Amino acid sequence: MIHSKLVLSSAVAIGTILGVGVAQAADFGAVPYTKAPAFAPVSPVISWAGFYIGANVGGLWAHSDITDVNGYAAAALPGTVTSLNTNSFLAGGQAGYNWQAANYVLGLEADGGYMDLGGNTLLTGTASGTRVGLRNVAYGDFTGRLGLTWNRALFYIKGGYAIIDNASTFSTVTGSFFSSRMPSTDSGYTIGGGVEYKFAPNWSAKVEYLHFDFGNTLGYTVFNAAVLPFQFNQNLRIETVKVGVNYTFDGPIIARY
Image 1: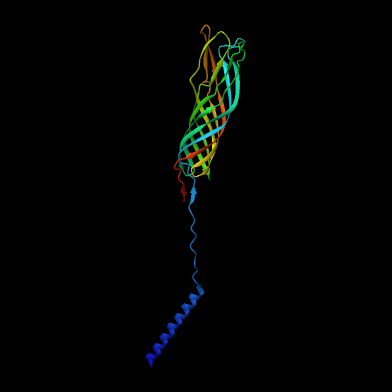
Image 2: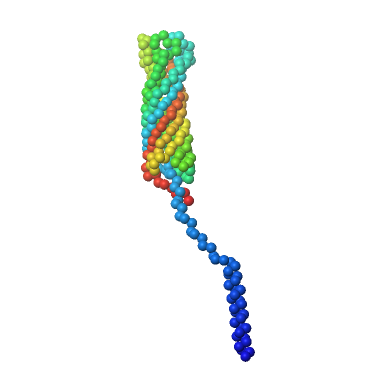
């Protein structure tokens, strides 16, 4: 009899414990199910790194001051200045290489082509139809570029060394003229900037402004019939705005994580 009571008491106790456990589990409710997040594709960053080559065309505005140092013109004092302004076009090509780190781009570029500078004017004080001016020239520049990317655009500044073929002109109808000695090339600097836009994986278009300054490197000497020298100092400043297109070789897409 005692054994039966123990068994019965144990069964009641176990049932009570189980009932409390079930009740407590019910209080917590069902375990919520969380859906795995959808796959998000990696956002691409347009790469500007690598070698590129392209072409450009645009407009130019040039200003030159020619100083008659020794007073070659009959009615001019030594140091008389004659000024000349021309405007026309330029065309050419460019090639370079870019390095990229995140949104920063560092590059080297060589640019060259043709400048339609041609123009002349009467030398101040001349009595013999002497004309001074500029000729159409080949030009080149070698620059460094520093840029910042935003979406598909690259905003950059650039500057460096510039060179043009002999740009000075001198002509006269006087019988006292003997010869002239002109520099073969004129060198200076260029500085400017622009924006370039990547419209296809390997293709980009740009708009660029450059200022060229050649100081007084265009100076030359003329000789009269007695072979006496007369010095002319000539400076040259050119403003250019051009549009261009570039093709980049092996320009990979860099992933942004």
